[in-house]
Image (cartoon, rainbow, N blue to C red; front, side, top):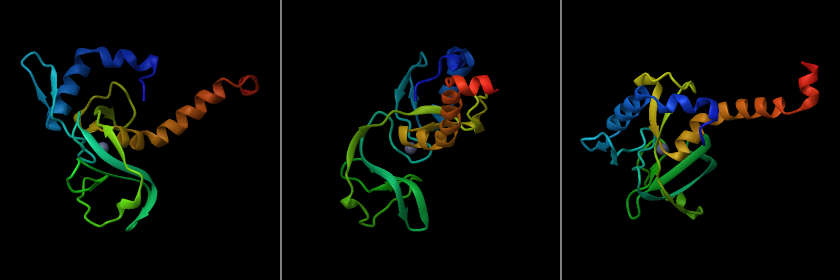
Length: 157
Ligand SMILES: [Zn+2]
């Protein structure tokens, strides 16, 4: 998800750069002496390796006791893992349509509040985990923005 213009200033501060450095380090990331991120971090939710290609499939599915959004991934030839980073040896797959994706980690705010850069509020997440964490928030902000563009609703307020 692109960062909305009104939130961009939060991601340009030295505090944010420090927070991002802390969280990516916690996730296994390496930095050079100048503080440039070199890769090596893993999604703190599902374990996907940043900047690597993985096979994946996802969707809303029933799986064991779980019912809802689910995702499985593996580096090619390795064991499948679930969205909770649990090894998954059962042959559930594997009739699913696989995609190969490039993992891109982002550091996300769990409470959706840019500027709240406490470690416990931040998590390094892959694209799928990020979208899934933000799903309910996206639904709320999307409908609010959509309503704001409707002239009849603005006049009624
Ligand atoms: Zn993930």
